Amino acid sequence: MTTETCNIFSLEDNERIIPDGIANFLFSDAKGMPLFPPEHYTPNPDVPFFFTGLLMAVCVQGEAEVSINFKKHTLKAGSTLMVLPSLVCRFEHQSSDFMLEGFFFSFDFFAGVVLPSDFKALFQIGLCPCREITKADMAILRNHYRSIVEAYQHVELAYRVHIIRGLLFAMLLFIVSRYKGDAGVAYAGTLTRQEELTARFAALLSIYYKSERRVSFYAGKLCVSSKYLSQVTRIATGRSAMQWINSRIITEAKLLLRTTSMSVLQVSEELNFPNPSFFGQFFRKHTGITPYKFRRS
Image (cartoon, rainbow, N blue to C red; front, side, top):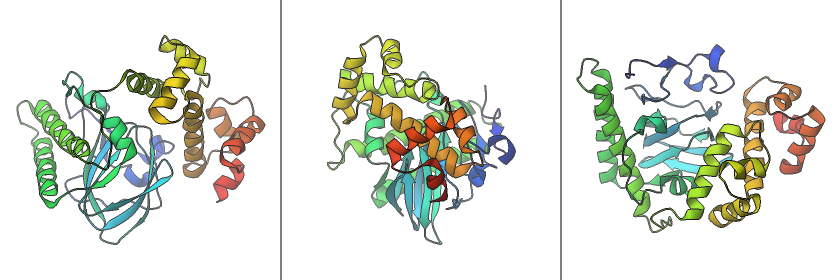
């Protein structure tokens, strides 16, 4: 496949997953496409985003308060933003001059690329999705951005896909390298067995969370016992496997309630609950309010 093979989001076809904030921008499953066009794009503060890949961006001016999976972070000029797959991102507040430069891509775009042996990006990004960088680093990243956009626009360029992949991977590694060097963000080097198993569990959860809410299902896929999986995830993240499963369902439920016109009945069916009453009890147990109150809040 080439970078010319892509989909254009439309509000009609993608309203549930991608609200109208980025409906007109290019997207690719495995090729990697600029999320933002060569011109700067100012996000709509009223529209949350739900990405199936990784968002990597640099704030070039202004300031914003960003909610990632309903946890707030401050994004300032001279800082990076990294949003992992399947997380809900919303620009809660932003200055009038707030602007980003960045890309949205699938990890599949890097299939076959050899990662450094101590690459531990997911844990670090999850801890600190927004972080400030130096002016020198900002200049380097903006040069990366321009080079990628220029390669993307150069349709007749030989090895165009490979060039874009290399440039994008270099930009990703540069950002992650700054996480590794940041004393304020723990970086333990090579993944431990517990962290590796937790990462595999998280990947499975992103696929099966709507249909499978049993720890035993994921443990079976990973060839370990349910007790061991829960112990491992608690050691690696501070949360049990069941807590992660419930959290993923609640995140999706909140997204559907806030960003779609689906009824509570439809949301409960979408998430494979036996009936709206059971869904309501589950939602209230984990949030303290009913789905109806959450939608109106």
